[in-house]
Image (cartoon, rainbow, N blue to C red; front, top):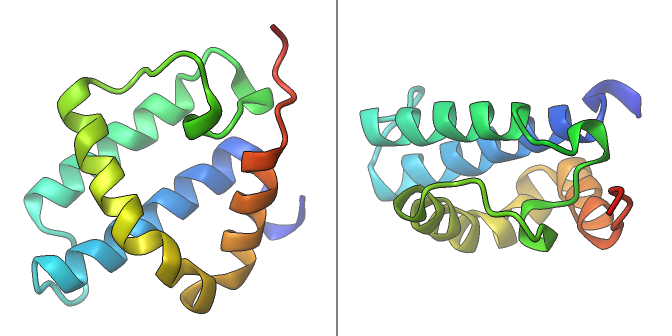
Amino acid sequence: MGSFGNRSTREVITVEKMINLYCKKKHKTQNTRCGDCEKLYNYSRVRIGDCRYGDNKPACSNCRIHCFKPEMREEIIKVMRYSGPKMITKYPILALYHFIDSKINDYKK
């Protein structure tokens, strides 16, 4: 689907952009992520890549299986609450794809 690839690829890119926005504002970083945000990004990337639904994965918020550890899930929720609204103006195409992906529930039950 365009230059953003499949759903998993788009989700990793979207999470990366969200974490970057959050880290820049909350942790006052410039061109790099702090250690905690880097850890969260790497953890998220692995969990998205290991999703049992593969390219037919639902948006994590719509999934019945929460594969993030509770403490990491809390962190990514904080990031998404802060960065989600900002994605519309900073990365509108990714925000649109994320919105569409979150409304599609096409994984096999």
